[in-house]
Length: 382
Image 1 (cartoon, helix red, strand yellow):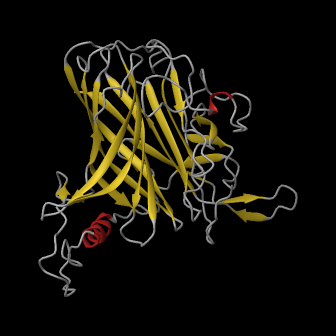
Image 2 (cartoon, helix red, strand yellow):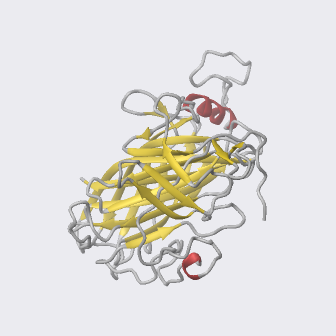
Image 3 (cartoon, one colour):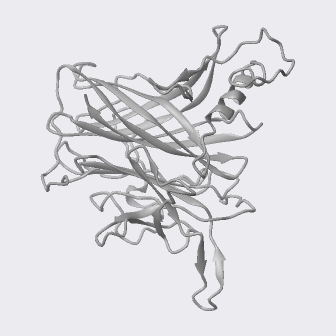
């Protein structure tokens, strides 16, 4: 297996991951496909949970990480650590080539991106040094997003690279911790009746197949849980991601350009959505029905769930399918993305949920180009 590196390499970014626990690597992170590198086999239905904790319970720490995938490059990041014992605010990520010395630092708030919503963004070093000759060498570009709940009970980390023409190497981790920030043991008491709404931040990284580079995306995650149905101990779960906007690697908002391309791909007129361009296209062609956030900013089509009776289990683990669908004013629609989300519930009253989603689709701005969006979310019961 190999991935094509882009001609231009630059500074890299880091991935953060939860503390070591049951089901995590402790042998140096060789990524050799042994033990929990193989996805868990269970009778909970599809999609299956990612590899990680082999004997989860409602009262124990649960750690899940991206399965090793030699076709896409996912799951290669291992031994992810967040280090702040001396105020350094940095990540260590193993098993990713050309990311400097494996240490990622906080993004530049002036010329880059340091924060997406309530989540932190990290970068790898732009250069490294040959220890023998002292020659300065450029590294590949890596970015990572780290999120931790307000209680410290849950957290996630995502790392992706923009230096490959393919999706490139990376990984994600999400977990329910053994203890919260106050030192209290974390457990889940899963209700058996009632419904609940959860709300919180969402942030992700987009990489591409067919071109190099990366983009950031942020928005609002919204989850609904029916604790009383389905029957036989199963719960109904619906995840929505709203008000998503896209930013380039320097933090510039490129959402409008993306939506204009999406409008044209569905038959709409060029520049007819937000611009004043007159392309001479068919004025009767369907136009994209777009949404705006509370501030009036155009946003991406909403991510919606595919409801299934086997999305959640008694340990509070959730896995389900998602779709992004663009709607047009003639009543037609295009599926612009599809994927899977994974999550873990936590708390005496099922107070919070941490999760990660991975979605792919065609990028309307470039013919033959696909995107992979990996995003993390932490939502709280309202």
